[in-house]
Length: 324
Ligand code: PBG
Image (cartoon, rainbow, N blue to C red; front, side, top):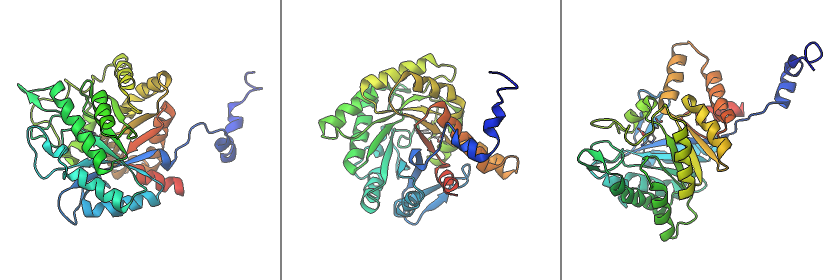
């Protein structure tokens, strides 16, 4: 049937019909809110390149977590800024490290919150790379043990899920074994399976103080030009025991999210990263775009591409909009 018998506009003529046939929906259940944790007390610092995003000292986390729950956001992902950094990122796996303490505080005060932790060394190394070095190169195999120790220390502190973001080869199986050998066989791994060497992480590196002090991350994060390699990375992580596959960034990689959705049956997560957030905020501040509508359209596009879960700095704003 074609025009004039068939008229697509018939099904767009009012909001009742439009909402009846709407294919994709957003819900606070699908959103994960990133939280940055600082040393000290009474700290609540706004990140200058990410308006509306704060770095909290541990005593301030509880309030923020409760606000998330009130809005229906039940999952957060934690990033830590340690007191001291060193060459091997020992703050990442210290029993009493900043994240370990933050997890305990959150699980103690807000037990119903799903606490996910970012597992990486870059916030804890003085050189800012995601692993330990050998002759100024990131030493993959030596880093694996440190990542496994980090993930295990998070689980021991009470983390509900761990999310390795370092992009070392073989880290999912190393982390899975370390968790299983210590009776954390029920702790899921959300793998940053397909993480690109992206310029969109700029504002995050301000927030988490983790820019590499020399070179860049291109010897471990993926080349933005590659999509077949994304499938290969995801296949490896599935074989090694990942429970969720993540694509990062999100909007510039919607095609990759779709390919993973079509190829794998695991849940797919997408990280709508700091630069993607900052661009919308900046244009909205200038009055050039409608922030609320651009936010909703962007997050919807990530869902439509095939993501089940979205990690986003807009989680709270989106949940508020959905509740209107
Ligand atoms: C740690 C990590 C980064 C992000 C999440 N985990 C930074 C990086 O890889 O450089 C970026 C998140 C964002 O930009 O919002 N490796």
